[in-house]
Length: 222
Image 1 (cartoon, helix red, strand yellow):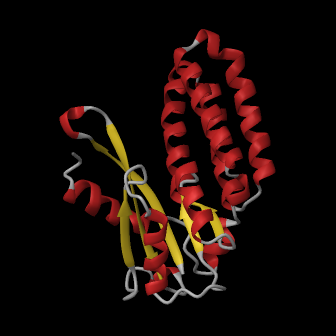
Image 2 (tube, one colour):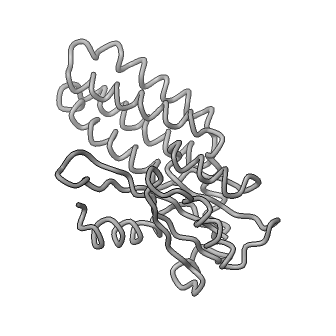
Image 3 (tube, rainbow, N blue to C red):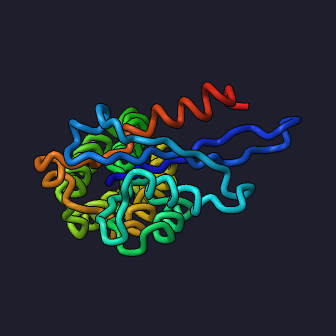
């Protein structure tokens, strides 16, 4: 069984702020290509700060799909503390993986900011872009130590020049945030390449339709 979890924000009444909707999809499928066609896939959603027993309801949903006490469950999420705590409570012996989609989105943002740096310093921009591509390659293969070394190298070069460039300072902050995020979730970074070759799911993209259905369509984002 594979369970993908993600969150979406909805504006509160009278525009007094936002609250987070946790939504997900639970799939009983042996391989990645079977995910969409799985007849036993079920969706769930709740507001953790309002619902009194959200984890209990998700647990019952999984049991309704035939979950056994000793059955392996793979949870995929963006690694946020909210969903990570939910996963640990639901099935303490389960496996938790960081969502590859979350990693690629973070790197995409960094690459966009690198273009701004390249307009001011083409050499630094090209070197940073190449290093970030290598970081992506390292994370894909689960070689996290190599990824940390490359990120540290990127930060060293950016820090030398950030006082003279707003674009470089912005990129430096973003790389630092990405580095912190990855380090906080280092225990949940598998060898994505190997899992992909085995046909396993590595991304919560199959949850995106759930988020759109619950947050965009049902609540119209408000």
